[in-house]
Every structure is written in C-alpha cells, then in structure tokens.
Length: 446
Image 1 (cartoon, rainbow, N blue to C red):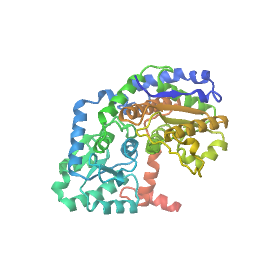
Image 2 (image 1 turned 90 degrees about the vertical axis):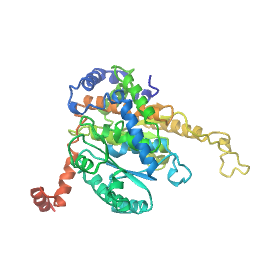
Image 3 (image 1 turned 45 degrees about the vertical axis):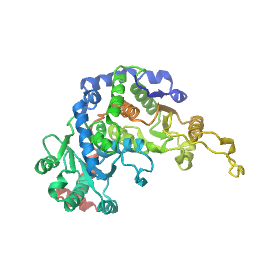
Image 4 (image 1 turned 120 degrees about the horizontal axis):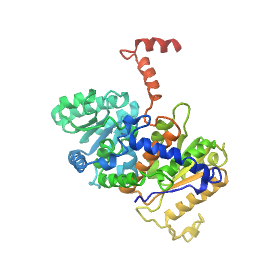
C-alpha cells in the first residue's frame, strides 16, 4: 500500500466534488488505454509496467557498473538533456546533502555532475577546467547520439578524457545509455567497447527516470535504487483500479476539473529546498505531455518560503487563473531547535525550543489558508519523508496521473511534435548539411 496522500478539500470552493467525480468515467477510460495500449501514443507505454518488470539482474548490473565508476572516479559527468537529465538530477538533489560539493570528508559517494543540458560555453569551459585535475568518468545518455546539446558536451569531454588517460583506458570510464541497435552512439559504443545500457523504444525520455537513464547516475551518487524501484512498484499496484481511491485518478480528475473551470496554470509548491529539481522534472513531464493542440495546463513551480518574498504577491492577488499543488514532506532527516536569546533583539524568543520544521510547517499552513481565502484552489500531496522508497512512489504517481490527465484532455500524452520546430530553425541557421532549403527560407525572414 502506498504512503502518498492526495487531499483535494481546498479546491471545493472552486469546483464541486460532483464536478470532479463526473470525470471518473473519462479517467477509467484513460486507465484502460494505459493498461491495454489502445490510446494515442501506445508505442510509448513501456513505463506503465516498468517497476514490476525491472529485474534483479538489471539492478545488479547497474549497481556493479556504478561501483566500478565510483571506485575509479572522483567525478562522473552524466550527459543528457530533458528526461535524460532531469529525473536523475531531481532524485540526487532530493536525497543528497545540500552542501555535498563543499565536503571533502565524504568518501561514500562519487560526485555526479551534469552536462549536455545546455549550450553554455562558459559552463562547459568551467566544467572542463574543473575536470583537468580530477579522475572522472562519463555516462552519456542519448537514444540517437546526435541530439545537439549532449552531442557537443560528449565530444568535448570524450576528447578530454582520452587526452588525460589514453583511448583504451578512457573507454573503461565511459558508459553509454542508448538505443539497443541503431544510432550514432550505439555505433560508437560498439566500436570503442563502452559498457552500455539500453533505452527501450517504448519509454520516452520524460518517463525514463526508473530505467538505467536515471538509475545509473542515482546509483553512482550512492543512493539505493532498489528502494526507489520498490516504492514505484507499490504505487504501480495502488494506481491500477479506477475511482477516487486511486491517487493518480484523484489528482488527474481534480486538475482537469479545475482546468475546465478556467484555472489554466498549475503551480507546484514545495517547502523543502531539496525539491527544486523535482519540480523541474515535473514541469517537463506535464508541459511536454499535455501542451498540444492549443490545450493544456501551464506547469509552473515555486520554492517556498523563499518565493513568498518574490512570487507571493502575484499568487495572492494576481489574476485568478491559477491553482496550486502543494508537495508536503511530513518528516525531516535532521533536527534543529531554535535557541533562546537573552537580549531577544530579533523578537524570536516566542519560537525558542521549537524545531525549524515546525515553523516551516506553519508557514506552509498559513500560506495555504491565505491563498485559498484569496481565491487560489489548493491540492496537497503528502509524502512521509525524502527517502528513496517515497520518491519512487512520487515519481510513478506523477507519471501515471500524467497519462490519465493527458487522455482526459484528449491529447496524445506521449509525443512532442512542437519540440522539433526550434531544432529545424537552429539547424537551418547553422547551415547543417541537408537543410539548404530551410537555410535559404529562414535567412529570407531575417
């Protein structure tokens, strides 16, 4: 049984329980499409049964590869973009020490850095400079091997690693996660003898965090991928049946009822700074899945209480086209108690003896009350703690709800046709071979 809870009572001033439940038949039909592969994008449903289908042999292979990288590297650079980057980053940041990069005494974990998620020249130059006196390895993640951002980063870092170690030794520190049979990266990995893992054709990038795409970097960082997968398995079982008892159904129907009531923007709110990149992963999952055919809830995110001092005014008093989904963590990993101060110049002695998290929880509760009073419907999703098993539940929950929600919206949740538009323009502007006509056309617009 899953531990995650979904509370929708604070949306009922905007939509009724009946309006939410009216979408249950559509949600049931969506579940049927997901489980039986009868809906749009059915070729990309490998993630649906993935937790239960993940074998002990695969997990053991990932763990062994991670250990080899940790034993031989101070730093491992995971190269990828979109879903090939955000899932691993989200989990590592959520589970890790906030100041791990400054600690020199923690030998348990290898530092995992990321590249290929941007085309920042300074970023890449500074990364290469950092790696010049480091023992480093590379995990390169790309189905094709030709996606511009990660391909540039891999070309640079592969050349650097081979220069530092020689080609033969460098090949032992490069792992490719790519297509099973085709593509430039698969060809190179075969030629150079890289250790490889497969990105299955039926799992899209934004749904790939529970495959080797996410599991290998997470394991390299020293976290328990078996517990992560086990949590996802629990949520897989909890989201099979239709109806409000299914948390993914409840979330999907509620957000669609709000969308139909004119709430076009969903803000994912957290009160734990470790969840910043989890929100970034969520934004891609929902934005790329639902933003089609001029439809879709716009996914945004804030980190509170920090953003209460920047975005709080707009949320409280701005245009009433928004709703919030608050992601709440029940318990913390550490205990910090606020001390008493004799002078009490800051006036905080009324908090003396309280845990910092108690203050944070009251900031969360007070904000939720204020925003609801201000006309912002609030959903609340609660997890017990930031631990692998609960993050596994949360990841699968959002994935399953995304598939349901996309089908309720009547779009294909598993393609991304709009993403190709910028690529065509970029290739034309860079005069890529084969794009001569596009180059002439776009230059005529300039």
